[in-house]
Length: 415
Image (cartoon, rainbow, N blue to C red; front, side, top):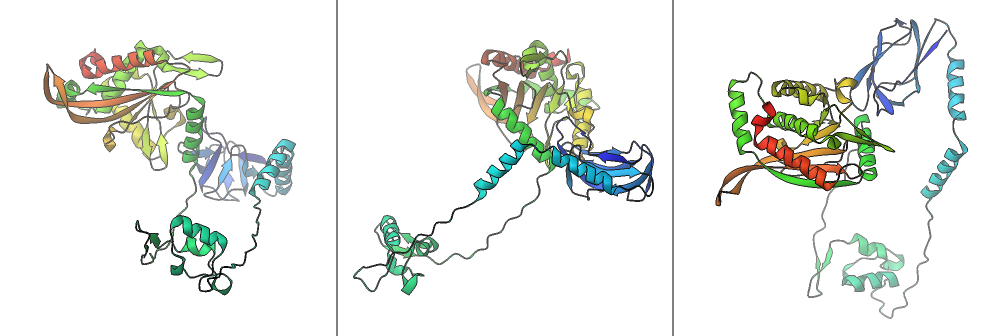
């Protein structure tokens, strides 16, 4: 009996997938466990595995096409089976699922797209000045903008100047002394390029829009003196086989601070608040199509070297779109670091379903006051975006103060 292959839901946020390439063709023998195709989701490119034995009788989606989750993409069965009836039945089911409410909404949408064109009859100019013919509207616009109509050639009946003639002659500019200056007409060509929105970008747009407009954000910023951190990192890297970055130190310090403030490590779930006892830190990674957030799980229990190696590995997988679902799911807090891009300070949108996200700016050499004297120092600004339904200002400030103390004296996170 023929078996229908549907687009599976390969991630918690996936609504549709794109067939990157078919690895089998119609007529091929397929066994359970064979890879049928590569599918681009909102997170990564993943393999579509067959769970049935038989002949690939039908492929319903071309390479590069997107398909909603649960839609038919292929059929596997025995040679000679009639797949037309199967496809017809599936199409009938889809039609039956359309509700009257949806149909009414479609009708309203179509109505809003209709444009009503009103033709305004032109009024003959009865001006006594036979040398200059212009419509009343054109005269009014010219008077308001201080434009001399004698510099404009009319395109109306008998050379009459109309509104369009004034709008098209943008090279006519009025100076302060009411003398019109005619500039050479600028010649150029309008052009643009449009590309389809990737599955990743669609998901980013939807999820962050939902977060921004459903979670009441507020932001608090703090400066951190990085002098001791810079010196401490230098000493660590002199003997460590794994080179530690400032971002690794920030992740480790954040994990330690979250252990002290569990509400910062929580989630708002409709009518309840989930306080997570585990600490999984998502690290935002910029990739070609947008942003991925691989997760450092149990970050508070890992050494700096462990964190460093794992971040590098996950970042590389993210850029090559090879992340597994288990490597991007489950974050309880997120860090977004734009310091390496020369950004001093910014605010970030909370990653659902976290209660906070930490935006990290770059380290900037800045004059500071120390022991009553102005001396050179290195400051880094961090901004905590908070969901006000869970976290208030006092709690967020206390968390940042603890984070500041840990980063300014990094020996504490090694204990």
